[in-house]
Length: 293
Image (tube, rainbow, N blue to C red; front, side):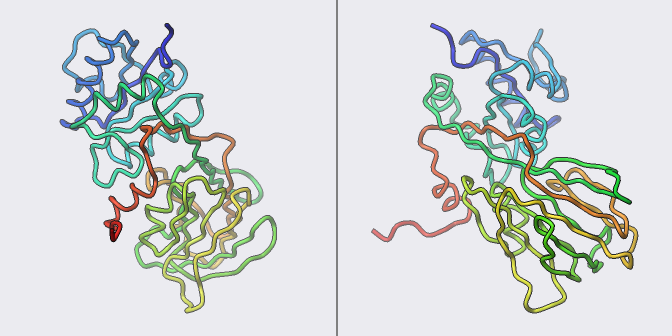
């Protein structure tokens, strides 16, 4: 009988004792079950196992059927931006804090992982976004984001001025510390901390959340997920402007530049345990109240 997943890639935060220990446990278990196992090259030196098969993150995306990412949401985001370009399922083991994207506990791995490997799981597609910086009509830089793309100044508490267009139609101009453009996946991250709405993952929507706007009437707004969002930077801005993708990748922006944010052609395929429930995750992570009776 053929396996649902033949090759499994193991990805983890380098030089993290807990992540290394979990990857060693996973490697032993998967190898005993007859799976081909690839360990991502940046974490492989931390693994105390001989003769492991080492691969880059890109090679795991190309060769594996399932990627297991061990770490927190931040590390999952970095891996997801690369893995979303390939037809691979991604499963998270939480070695961080909140763990919105990492379902499995490192203290209880075997039973839920065995069920997932046998097909007892849920598959979910999460769309990601692309941020592009144009200068004098020419593309200068771009990158993708799973959670959010954030326009902001390079210095703290430095107000900037820009215009926002949705599908070519002028929406508003603003003086603020910046703007967060968030996917539903990112709605429980930086966007939520800034007062943005929580969007359920299946929504085809983007939220625009102003950061400390210099007006009392500015509010977050949700637009169609297929919208093209254009931010036009005023020429009067300081030169140290940036667009941050998931807080990891920084794109430099100059006064007068245009930033285009839109849905990517790629999606992230997350694998969840069969009993996964998004509202349970919200209730547990955000300390919401339980049922009264």
